[in-house]
Each structure stands twice: as structure tokens, then as C-alpha cells.
Image 1 (cartoon, rainbow, N blue to C red):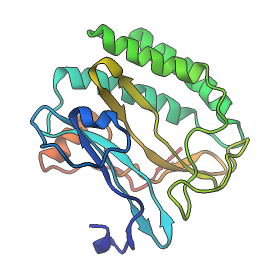
Image 2 (tube, rainbow, N blue to C red):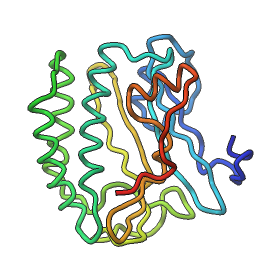
Image 3 (tube, one colour):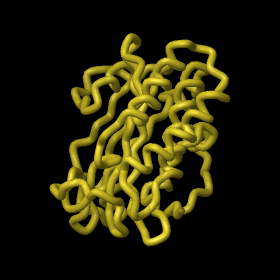
Image 4 (spheres, one colour):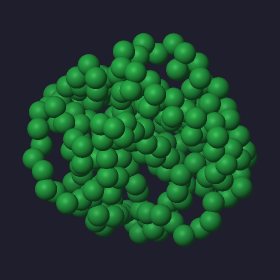
Length: 220
């Protein structure tokens, strides 16, 4: 697929993990068989015109989210999107996190949790952002997938980077993660990987062989 669309090759060694193997973020041993109830983590992207991409998606192997998967992936997606909607130019990463946490608190207050482990995992996710003193939201992307330039104090137009926060339930070895490539613009940002679906309904539709209407670039 990469070659067919004029990419040179893959940007990095493909990381594909199913079930509890996804708890190892860089798993690539390929020592297990896909099972119907597994979630699959797919971290794999091309190198195009000497520039790297880096995209992660997660989906159910059988094409349908179970009730538990729907609950955990659902809260993760809402928190992930809260971070996305807080990203803007000419502010620090810390300012983005502070803005996102306010939205995350509102999401947590209204989310219909049924599993206390999932509530605890989501709470840890939010607290990690609340207490973060980090200078970046993810890693820079350029001619290397983890580009060598140091994090910028502020998100300047032209900066290309990924976000890939993980939500984990360590006692059950559950790991949920998405990753998108963003470029900061003068007025907001473009999500260069928005064509790859993240919504539960869209993922299930694609897994069933259907199509979805997603713009090639999501602009904010």
C-alpha cells in the first residue's frame, strides 16, 4: 500500500500487537495469534519524499467493540480529543495541558463508568497531565520519525510533531493508545493523519468493509 501510493517505504519497524501484548509499547515479536476478543494496536507509517510519518490506531480484531472495550476506548478517545482541541499556536505545551485538563475534568464528571478499574485508569491519565512539567506534547517528526531537534518552548507555526498518550490498566495488562501527526499553523493546526478513523462507529464500519467520509486533513 505504501509503495502503491508513492511512498519510499516504511518510516520505522512496524509495531503490531494484539491483546495483552500491546502493553509493551514497542512489541514486535509476532509470537501470538489474533483472537476474536483482542484489541489490536497498529503503529505503522510510511516514509514519503524523505520525510517520516508516525501513526497509531487501535481496533477490535473481530470488527466489533465489546461493552468493556467500548467503555475504556470511549473514555480514552474523549480525553485524547480534549487534548487535541486545546492545541494552538504560540503557547507552551504546559498551557495546552492546563486547558485540556479543564475539559477532561468535565468529561470525567459526566462519563457513565461501570468499571471502577477503568475510572481509576482514566483518572490517572488526567492527573498525569494535571501534574506534568513536560516541555512538549509528544515527539517531533521530520526526516527521522523521532526527529533530533529539541522541543520548542512554544508551539510555533511549522512545527510537526505527534501526540500519543497512553491509558493503561496495569493489573490487567491493558494498553490503549492513538497517535496523530500534527503541524502547527498560524491559526491552529492540521491533523495530517485524520483520514485514519478513530471513532468507534467509523472503525466498526471500516472493519465491516464500509467507507467513511473523512477529510484528508482536519484543520482547526
